[in-house]
Image (cartoon, rainbow, N blue to C red; front, side, top):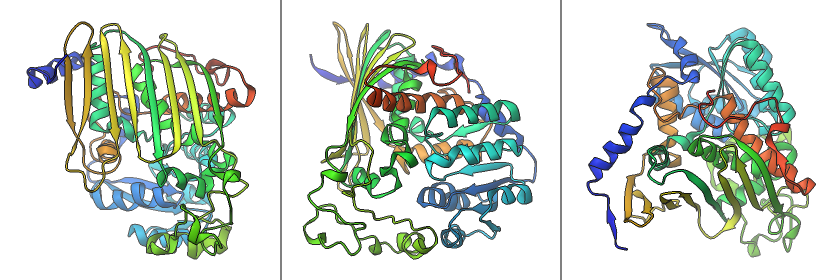
Amino acid sequence: MKSKLLQSRRDFIAKTGGALAGSMFIHPVAQALSIFDRPGEKMKLALVGTGVRGLAMWGREVVRAYQNQIEFVGLADKNEGRLAYGKSYMGVSCPTFLDTDKMLSETKPDVLIVTTMDSTHHEFIVKGLMAGMNVISEKPMTTDEQKMQAILDAERKSGKKLIVTFNYRYSPHRQKLYELLRAGEIGDITSVDFHWYLDTSHGADYFRRWHGHREFGGTLLVHKSTHHFDLLNWWLDSDPEEVFAYGSLEFYGKNGPFRSTTCRGCPHANKCDFYWDITKSDHLTKLYVDNEKYDGYHRDGCVFRESIDIYDKMAVQIKYKNKVQVSYSLTTYSPYEGYRIAFNGTKGRLEAWIKERQPWDEKNEDEIVLVKNFGERYLITVPQGGGGHGGGDTRLKDKLFLDTNAPDPWRQSAGSRDGAMSCLVGIAARKSIEQGKPIKVQDLTDIPLAVIGRGA
């Protein structure tokens, strides 16, 4: 069957947009942010966790883009060297703290931004909520079900809101998939094939850092896959019900032919494909290398060190409350970066193969293929957004800091429930691998499972 652009594409976009016209609403998380409609006043922010993500995405970029809307009133970290450098890097004049409790009590921010190591997210989220402020947390929300329940209890008790930063929801092509699915273009969704590939640069980097230890990151099924599981929950508009998984460590860690502690000073540097010289980056040197003496953390850890105990290949089966079945996999040593996804439905199939754009690529758009049962095959092109994560980073931050009252027709704002359900898939998958049996999501926390209209 001959492939063609939708006829007319303008009419088709109008059709899918029209299907969502009745869903224009303010998400509860966005309502929580509406307190900042105070003429002449700025949103007061405090940040805990001055690593790369905190200082760039939630630090310097926010300062530069939203200087008329926000002001930082405090920075906190356990590493005094990173804290001092981070203040300079961000270009702010606010006080710094080694004690987060002291920062919260003295600066009284409107919002606390949490960008610490995953396993400590719950500690600072709970502190912020109970101190009477809304909290923005990097994904994943946390790393196990006990910590998650503590966050949920604190949010209920405090009456404040937690916003989880799922930037992938905001990228244009993922939003278009959501629109097409909501418009019923493939009928009722029955199953999904979703396979994500991390290349030997990005994938390997998780094994250099603290993410390589499950006590800190909960394995990549939680740290990385929480992005992917959230997309599935959002696209399918249903909660995951049961999870079964396989996973193993067969490439990195103890499987390497040789090993060291760090890339710096490694005797195998000249024959290791994964050798990485952190000192070539002035920023990373000033942030990490110069401050190792304060906490002993090495940013350039050997990808083959024996202590690595996470999986480097994972396969997960998910059964949803609405009966959709999902086959998911994550590979961490692929020659390219990207993912394949296909939604199968009663009226057709929607699929995409998205590769990370390379500097030499001339094409600045993503493609989605819609195939109708007994009908035509359509090619839908979606321009890529500017900025990180396919344009998702900027659109997310605009929603949080520029126009908090903007309608949320595609339900892209994510709260504690969204954050919990994405983590729970990864936690259940990890438990399934360890226990060799399917795991019921309902058994992990007190969140009742639902099909649609979940809220925050």
